[in-house]
Image (cartoon, rainbow, N blue to C red; front, side):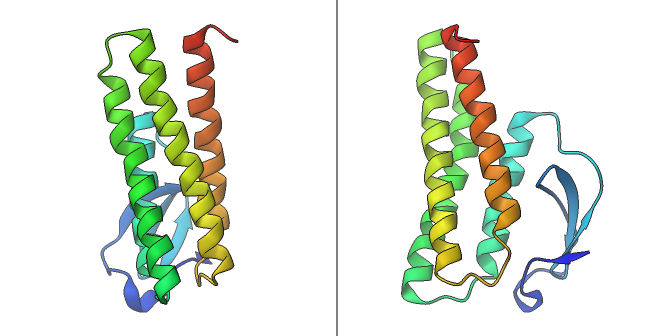
Length: 150
């Protein structure tokens, strides 16, 4: 097991979540691994946004940390919400546009995570950064395929 969160600030309810190519159960601040991420990208993005929100609960809040943590929550949440819009597009152009917004929000989340890490986040940002990088590659690949670049 790997400790990720400050146990005093996390709910005692076990929550299934996904980080770093593994399913985890988060309970009282610990993560236990099993073997798979959900195949459904929408579900994976929802779990990503939820993981960021739970991670943010464990942060020590100085004024700069509060600002960047809030921005991180907004951008990661926007990833999942905008992907919902991607699924509802009717044209290729609209799909590419909406998916590009998802990609931009993922890149913003990556930068915000790095800033939070540099500000001294107590939790381990590496699994979240890894998941962010993987999601960036997935979304970029979807955009390329829609544009006809393989």
